[in-house]
Image 1 (cartoon, chains in turn blue, purple):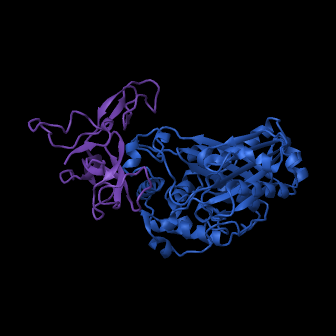
Image 2 (cartoon, helix red, strand yellow; image 1 turned 90 degrees about the vertical axis):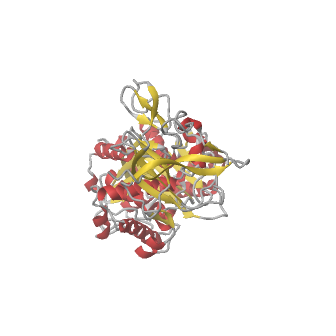
Length: 384
Length: 151
């Protein structure tokens, strides 16, 4: 493949995740963008194409009022948990199509506390579904996890191990929200939310922002000492039979997730295998989801997760380091920013300048994965 | 005390409204979905097009009244509105999917914690979801342990 056609990440910026009443979503987005521009060593005037996403915190393209009215094309994206990946996809495709040589992707959100507010009619469902107390994402994750543990002979302890690793990684990461390490027992003994999932096995809606500067081909190497190649990126929606949130019914099975399709597509396009991955980000809205995604993306086989976790294979120094920044569990999930946080962490790991614990041995292949309602997944492979 | 079903479109209008003479009178009303004439997919609630294929016509399908718990969990905290709190306030309740053979249906599970497990035989019933302002009990569907369903 010719280098001139490839898209690279040449800069990244992030506003710390968590809770900070002194800043708005737009404030955080602006800081993340300025951080990414400075990291890439370019000015806002150099950006020829932009895309931004936010679920609840405003129209991203209004950021031009703060950054500079350069007339740049700016596409707004609202694609649930795949919002961040969709902004990267939008910019990368524009660069490949010759629209510009430098582009910017930004995502941000600031959510209120507690479970997300939902509207039955927005999902094409009758009011009865929410009124009778069945329209909760937390229930869905618990129901899916319960069934998965049952089918694959995994214990509830494995769920605690996921959370323990997430909070340990978060405790070492300056941009994470939850920085207090917890023991397995503390996770298991925390408040029962929806069994088998306890309070500390769930992430919380929080706030944050992240941004990437992307550049095409040779330009990337002019700008950046160690550009990270976007080897592949795929976005998929659900097909018949996938087990999704807010489903009053399911077919008897088999239940195949869009994560499987998206992961297969990115590895095929990149010409790599899941076994080649040296640092990974997996959507971990809850411990159960990460367990399931480990196997759905091909990073391990179904039912192998518990042993993998017990051996420390998913720790930063392990065979497949997962969520080295603590993921959603330690960072919270500002929907629009969460996917770009994943890119930020993997890029910094591949460049050997992780903000938290650096994966040893100069990793060369990174992987990101998001999954969300109503049955959407995006994966990417990043290489140096 | 008067009562009503939360949404008539979920239920079979013919069942459970016996006059005391027809068989099945007094049983809870059956759930009604739809079945695709081409691929056989059964959906709940009913809808006019098939989510799997473009070929079939959807016809009304009264769903089986008994099945087995396929997955379950508990709703510990009171959900935000539009959840309607039942009379007497929120109490933790079980929800799950029930395997009815041709379709898995998500439902409230009127099953005690000590009994609940994947594979438990259950049977259709109703529970009070909330009360209208005039005191009318609003009923929704649920599944409870099926004492005869052990097989």
